[in-house]
Length: 126
Length: 395
Image (tube, each protein chain N blue to C red):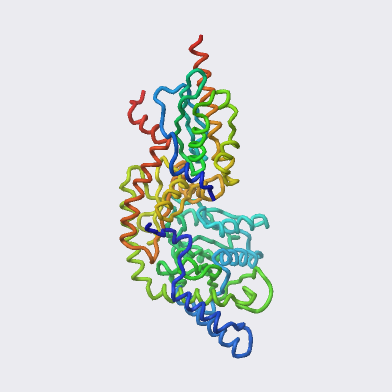
């Protein structure tokens, strides 16, 4: 049911873990629905230097988290904000239809992490 | 790579003797059992031999066995058949919250036809409470349908006691014995039930065949209409190769039951002991009133589908009550009915044993599972939260 790329990212997830002093953290989902993704970003001069993730969820949830980190490391935050859940799924050569909505939230988590980073930056400016 | 099949609750491999019997039936006895000529008579003999073997498995008389396309059809025939036949007497049916969908959804469909349905709750072990049943019975109750053992958590219900109360009340009792017939001793007269569903592919027979036991004198309308086969309760030319396979499987199960039950129980207990020794892994279901083949645990902080995928990579086949494996958004209705929270139900693992499993298989599983759990927990944001909780004193 999963593509080879999904299985690769599921079995060998990239960038699992946490960033000790992250520029921003974003979390989506809840344990009731069976998927939680938390994404940590390290930003320097508006460039995403590092991304780490922790995910509770099915194979698709873990694989989308993993590939999402690969897609945005080295990108500017403006570029990263353009990343959609659909683009994440496409980068994995697709997901089963029933997984498109419930388990494909990595871009949302990333956007939340960027929003968190921006909010913290505003706070420090004040 | 070692391959360990631990999903016998889903289906079982077909026994070689069953395959042989089915092939012989298709090759040598293609006749229609309803035909008068020798071809038909030979087929009829195979049909009736199979019926005797299936009847023997559950302590019934051959004429009380109606062959169906499987457990689902047997459940539907029992529930719709009795509900409609008894409608003049009453329109109330009682079932339980942990039934297979073949029963639950049949009852829901009857609700749309105007029947009243009471769904009994279960306790934390998945057991129906006798007092709840007593309170639910009404003068207009015509049918009570409660499964013998649950397919997910393996809890065995006190069907004998339940049936006694139902019969005293004057209602008809059906039990779905798909998980028990052939796995633990099942005797329709000991249990006292009027109707009992059984399936072939759960006991090393072919898929697509099952039966409904109908106690003599039980009123029941057929679901389909046609020829006079199966005492007009299930018309249509019989699936003879399937039925012959089911008969052979029943014969083998009757023969091997005591030995296999004690062997399975030993393997099951080892598996339960080993798995529940892992921190925050808890057994679901009853510890003793439990199918000998069933192990069901909840593993905190991880999700069932990812666990199954990783087990599969190691050659181990299991199943889970996680929503992600069912195609719906909710985890297992059985675990939820037992009061298990959503996030813990998502992390459930069911391993169901069978004849092909050995001690070495259990050793392998107990070596692989802890490694996988550790790997998934290391990835889980719920797990570090828990660590944080234990490390930080509560303010």
